[in-house]
Image (cartoon, rainbow, N blue to C red):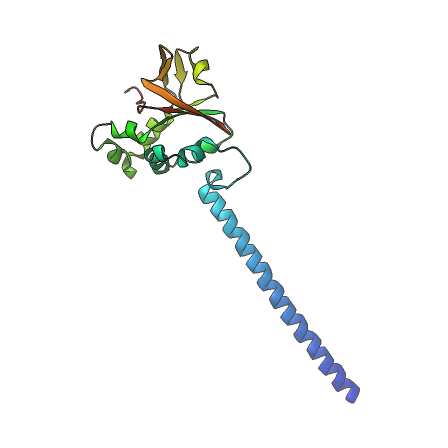
Length: 193
């Protein structure tokens, strides 16, 4: 009889131990699954533009974000939700208007373009500042036109030693991990259709 009670008692402890172990494993598994789901959701919602990488050369978006002279451009890219486009493998050539270039537009233009209902028009203008390639300012002198990311063309002019793209003068060039950023002194507006 004592042996039966001991077996019953031992069996009860063993069952209790197994139940507790299973609950802890379930909690751990659920916590891991929850964390993995959270990571996947964050990646899906934000895309590759928000992945931090300290080892690579900065991409064109990171260069713009790091520039105090391009805060308006960055705000426009964010409003048009084009961040992920500017971090792809490229190569991309971005003609980046300065804050002063945006300030030179008629009063209220930037504010109007940043409204959610004007997202498509803003995206069209911003895509007109991007083309495939990684060409230096001197190499651009060989071109008459460039095909932009919005499926329209823009002109390339050489005046003295200066290069103008769509009427905007290239005032600086910064190599990027996925192309090149040409800083320009004017917003390049696409031709009206």
